[in-house]
Image 1 (spheres, rainbow, N blue to C red):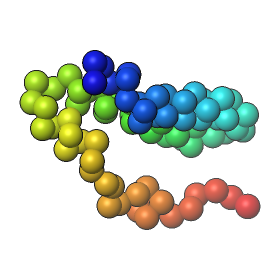
Image 2 (image 1 turned 60 degrees about the horizontal axis):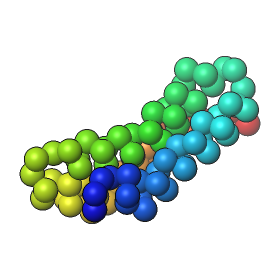
Image 3 (image 1 turned 90 degrees about the vertical axis):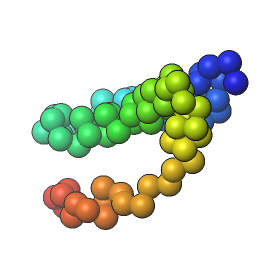
Image 4 (image 1 turned 30 degrees about the vertical axis):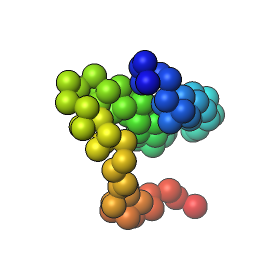
Length: 84
């Protein structure tokens, strides 16, 4: 691996972030500072976390970071907030 940009997971995360940005442009204006911001920040955090871990001088940290599986998701913590 020459750089984190060579990883398939990084490229997939980048594609996902672009799709989320495109998708959220069509959301209603009242979601601008809640759902849209949250989705966009979450989307870019994947690639950013990979880049940050790859630049860490301790290689074990990078391997540890990319193999972690989340145990708690936002949808497990927060109730549904959309109004039908």
